[in-house]
Image (cartoon, rainbow, N blue to C red):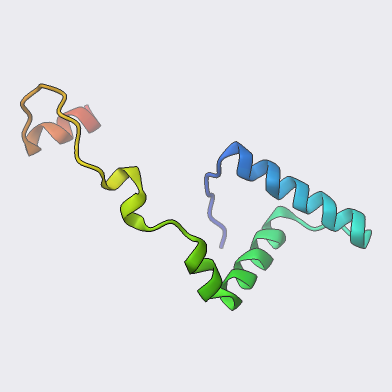
Length: 84
């Protein structure tokens, strides 16, 4: 089973560059799916080092204080805005 993921354009360019380097060095092509599978396997084998390099969740802007837009809302309005 496959799933789609979204990556930044810069990340896609890095993956494309790595894919190209693999082809140049080995003379064989590798699919982006196989490349990502290999990267994820490598990351799991080096889990401690990877975790140390990842940003702390609290540094994520999604965890910052909400912005006051100056409009009163309640939970019932969320569905209205999202689905209508």
